Image 1 (spheres, rainbow, N blue to C red):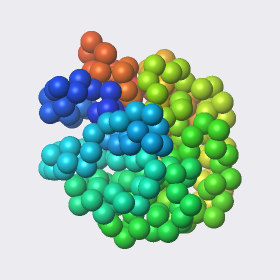
Image 2 (cartoon, rainbow, N blue to C red; image 1 turned 180 degrees about the vertical axis):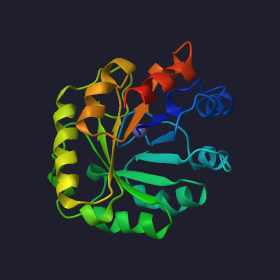
Image 3 (tube, rainbow, N blue to C red; image 1 turned 90 degrees about the horizontal axis):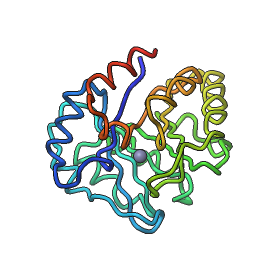
Length: 215
Ligand code: ZN
């Protein structure tokens, strides 16, 4: 079964509580929570206090740290209720240690890779990750379209995970809409992050049901 995770970053910023409730009511499987820092990427989003305000939320919360120095926020995010914490391979010189810190904090550890980052960054960390997040666009900039080469990257990561026989999930984030999901599901994606395509949908429940029916 594919997991659908709408990103709260694409929601109406003045109605976050209603939007989080709508994600739950739509039948989505997870809430994706992007924290952008204005350094690693040009944009800013919310801070850990907004994450903490979701405490008790009934779905798993998938925190994506799109920032430099993610080390500073691991413990805070775990305490604020993050189930998975994903950091960018490009954002830290000490990726292995950082992934261990995430697991020690009690969360699942994820590594995110930008469109131009080769999957060889996974070479020596496969035992230390629970999730690989493949960016479908360059992070932090809105209104981009899905970069087609990311589909081949999903296939390559799936082959590597299968060969290693490890229970690592693959997540694709950015530029996804219902029309683009099927080849990604066939390529072995486990988690699909939706942005505007979820929040602009006239019938969010139907959208999620249609995506679940694709697998
Ligand atoms: Zn994200």
